[in-house]
Image (cartoon, rainbow, N blue to C red; front, side, top):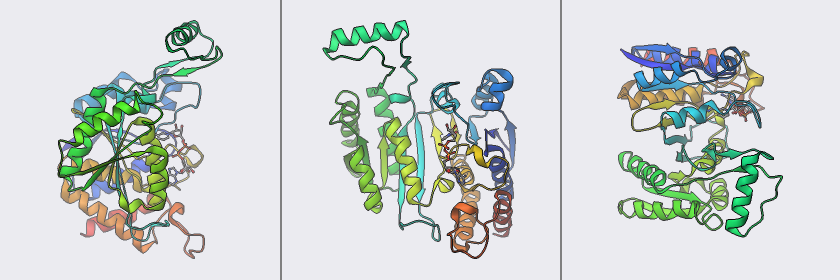
Length: 360
Ligand code: NAD
């Protein structure tokens, strides 16, 4: 029996979590789900979107799976997801994007793994608000030291990238490639412009790559990477990126395989792992039993492999492949406009998967 922390999250989180639990339970793997609430509703009730008991539960169980959590844009509380990743030092975000036969997309044969650094870069949360004294002091300091002029009415977000943070994420990407029989790692950056942050990322990546001569290594500037992925995604394998580019390219890669409904993810550190879909809380669909549960269920597949339940993971993956190929029990986002059969709801997808998983 495993004890796993479950954070259902906001918006569509609770309904996709319910679907995920049903499918995992169909494999016969015994899990005691330790339910913990975090996010917008908890913030409104308790004044803190990430209560200490949630972190304690994950620290105790070492493994968690979560639904998406709403982050207010521009103002309000800081992202719970970012806080969680930083508090538990979940430095590697792993997001596989693999084509499923029958999925509605322009591309075939996409098989990418995005390895995104999760703790540094513009996500470090070091920000200075326009007009505050400390911001004005910082602007004075920068103006005097750099010889450049920042306007007084600026807000500032800081982008730290360290040797330590880069070494461990690039090593993680190469170790992932080694253990999973991957052939190539591509480091993505904008080192031509940000010479001391992205430049450092690239320099460290090259150094780590030299220790893995049996895995091909290359680097790409992030804007070119976007174009390359849209034109010939099949040429790429494992991508390693600083935090912000990793976030953006993850969604781009999800788009290549048919959308966010199919993109799972894991946040992994040396001690803890938190699994979650790449997509957000899609508030407009909350409670409608409409959205695709595949991304969180595929995140559970990653989790099952992480805890050594390979057989259960393979069964769920096989059921998902078959359901997508059959095209009958899938949600609206996986249907083409000319499909004569209407889409089904979130729980109906879970039911169809459960029947398949139990039949293997
Ligand atoms: P979103 O991922 O919620 O939605 C983007 C688009 O994808 C929408 O059209 C949505 O309807 C669709 N979509 C998302 N999940 C889907 C699913 N499972 N099935 C079918 N369609 C799906 O992104 P957003 O609208 O930019 O963000 C909404 C909220 O989610 C924001 O508050 C954001 O901060 C938060 N968010 C949280 C996480 C996380 O918890 N890890 C990640 C991304 C965004």
